[in-house]
Length: 186
Image (cartoon, rainbow, N blue to C red; front, side, top):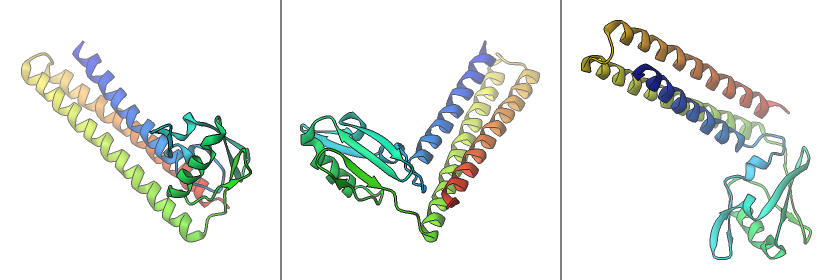
């Protein structure tokens, strides 16, 4: 019972780290249009700050454009201001009903900056996974000292924890390589 609970906790925590990394990577700009670029933008709507996707539909009509169509026409200007104030580097074009965000090609320098950012996010994810491994190994040792796990079970469990850690680190490396390739693609 203790073994199953420890492994379940380990899996959930490491999977959560991978999910967070994927969301962060989705928000990094490449040469292609992606609605995920606007996920972090918050708009003042009716006195409250809300995520952009709660006041407008966001779509990609073609690979080089993002279209934002507010559900309420009065929200067009606040959405435009929020996009301009954000650090995504896109300038919306307002046609009166829809905001069009053309995605300009990235410069070589900007691509390198994004690759550095991706590597940093990957390293942070790996650190988080290693911290989960350390915490789980400490819990295993504590259970062994308490007498709920034998020494053999403890060693076997620590080996399993390391194997799960290695699998998740490999997943992080693959996600980083994929994003690097997207960024460097012209």
